[in-house]
Amino acid sequence: MTTAQPRRRRLGMLAAAAAAAVAIVVAVAAPASAHVRVDGNPTAGGYAVLTFRVPTESDTASTTKLTVTFPKDAPIISVLTQPKSGWTAHVTTASLPKPETDDDGDKITTYVTSVTWTATGPGIPPGEFDTFAVTAGPIPKVDALVFPAAQTYSNGTVVDWDQIAEGATVPDHPAPTVAVAAAAGDGHGSASASPSSDAGGVDANASSASGVGIGLGAAGLGAGILGLLLAIVALVRGNRANPNGSE
Image (cartoon, one colour):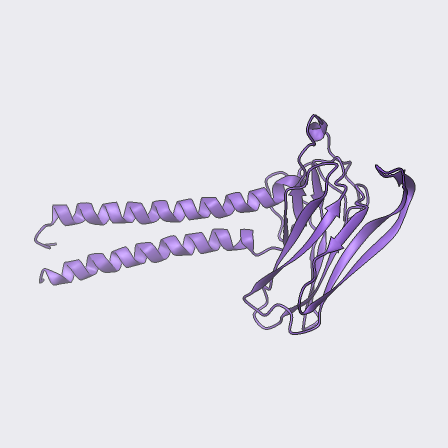
């Protein structure tokens, strides 16, 4: 056997190891990121920008509509949508069970129940994603806010993102969840909203849903990189043990 042959063989093994590492990263990280999710840094008592990230998972249909339900047991009084080319936005409100008074002494009788974005053009094509932003507040004093979402495709399919996480287990269709920071000097962080049979109920474990997804993606990336490094080390040692390329 010539010297070039074992070298080609080792290069092939290295390529296979790299492919395996990439496969691990894709297999673990993809499910964690291919969800409708909400990003933001809300603080209790203040106003925050909440951004809903929507990927189109279908291979043949586009996302043409998104409805986000706001929590009923932790009502948000005011929501303003960001203008978005190719989409219309509609904010739905309902009467509060008990009227509230704002900082200016004005009586508040309604809260936001949902926001719906509808495409006026092609929507979000397969293999792409888009974002939808709102400003919302005042932010309730809870540990986390859960926003069940319904994603509608051009073929009529509706995917509901409304499942609540159970401990460290991430469901197939988790509801978009964002943690709420305590206001300065406020110790509400140890208290959470009571669970509800309503889809907008906030479970004490729900705030971990998006964090777990990110953690799984990071774990997959780390495993892939570690596997690739171990493969390279093994090949280098093999080269040193067989400097002339003999079997």
